[in-house]
Amino acid sequence: MIFSRCVTFSLLSLTTLVLALPTPTLNDREGLDKRYHEDHRKHHPKVHESSRPSASPSGIVRRKAQVPISTEPVVLGAPEDLARCPSQQIACPISPMSLSDVQNASIDTPYECITPQEDLYSCGGCATLGTGQDCTAIPGVLSVSCAVGQCNVYSCKAGFTLSSEGKCLPNIFDYTTLP
Image 1 (cartoon, helix red, strand yellow):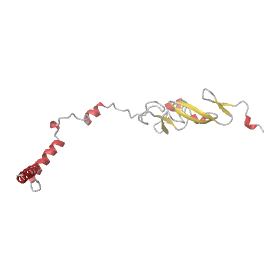
Image 2 (image 1 turned 180 degrees about the vertical axis):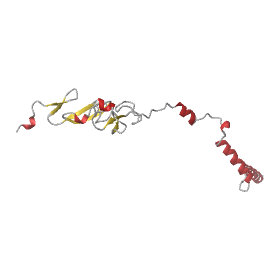
Image 3 (image 1 turned 60 degrees about the horizontal axis):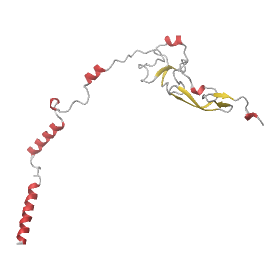
Image 4 (image 1 turned 45 degrees about the vertical axis):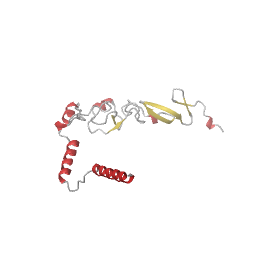
């Protein structure tokens, strides 16, 4: 009795297992094509079939929304000269110029793009136009940086003392010259 129940249970389990297995699709070309097209439609819907909103506006809408950038150069040293330099930078002439020279400067005038908020040689503006400062040219400075358009002195050369205002002041009496 136990043997017959075990055999019946085994056959029932085997039948259930066989029915639960997927059917082979090696020769079922029609079924494969149908599944491919369903998957393709699911992952590549037509424009009017998509249930999701567009990720970004079309290129036409984006182009219309953009403000045109002037390609004409502005006076050297101007804060927004996008024709010459990227944003946050200004175009400074390479050699020193007076105000009248700047007004008469041509498009061929040599310039460099600087970031006036952190440029060590043109801190706060164009040193060649007199609107900025060359931090390395401060008398007596040994270690200096430019941050937020201001020169910050950290140490001074021999013969100078760093003041509480951050300036290098010459020593009144130089102790290094004594024997």
